[in-house]
Image 1 (cartoon, one colour):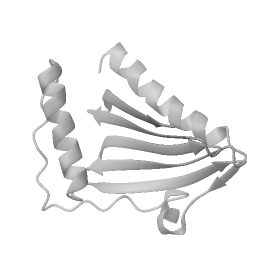
Image 2 (cartoon, rainbow, N blue to C red; image 1 turned 90 degrees about the vertical axis):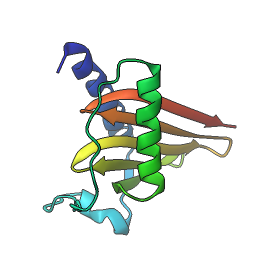
Image 3 (cartoon, rainbow, N blue to C red; image 1 turned 180 degrees about the vertical axis):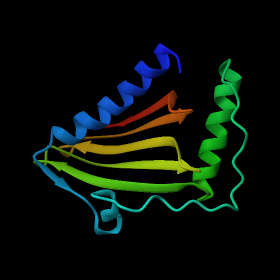
Image 4 (cartoon, rainbow, N blue to C red; image 1 turned 30 degrees about the vertical axis):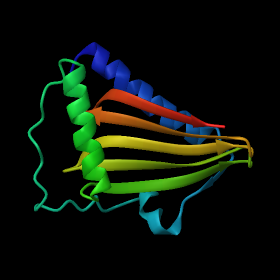
Length: 139
């Protein structure tokens, strides 16, 4: 793993960490309560074929990987785990992790601030390195 990859991965983890620790109130949905103090790993089915990892060398490769990840998520072929948070009713949101064969593939952060702003940030990951970020801001 190159120094640039380590820095990129550290930035994604830092964003998630700062979101968590900046809130005084934190809630975890009962459906996903296994995220806190989890003792069992995510269940991964052997029937899902894991596409051979390809190097991302250009924009076309990034588009192919983006299409692959989004199609797997839309067809419910990736495992997911999520939690909700509430920062004193100023900022509320949900963070969802999508994994395939134990590898993180995407982090989806959906949130709103007060009543006039909402956003969805998608962090696409390959080989533990973010390769594409899609941000959608809604007013």
